[in-house]
Image (cartoon, rainbow, N blue to C red; front, side, top):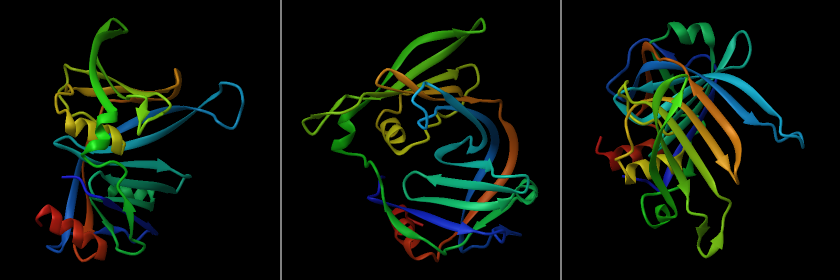
Length: 243
């Protein structure tokens, strides 16, 4: 089910760690931590220069409807972002050392406001498509490959063409990982997208590689993000989801 609105929660501070969850909280478990090397086109220069950053991806191997990213800001602080495609997103600053030790991360209700969900399951999805491509060979190993792309036209006007290419290791079963509203919506529309550990994602627009992300082998973790059921905007989502 897709919703017209999702929520963004902004909570800056270090009191976001909890000892144990309560019955009044929804839990979002994570069992894998993946290091990601992201290379993006530097728009601040006119030349085709690229810049690189590292961050960590937290996922639930059994549920790809949400994920989180952890980015180190400095030697002490890190930024945690959480995305639940059909309803909420969060942005939190945490102390990196505490986060590594914590099993439960509590998100408070402060700063919650409505945010329009970008694409719902419906007529807009006809402008996007997915396709399984021929396998590719990297370092003498065969990998699966598929693409999610737009169809160039929308509402009678021409749009910039863009494509997300996904390279996967089919020998390591894993749910598809999609990290934005459009690609996740297309995936829900077409569940035939192949399973496999994501090795690389490449974003191309107008024939130019704008972003490339390379994913390392996952590390097994046990962490849970907690959101209170009492949060005003979240009550609507809980009602829609049957909690």
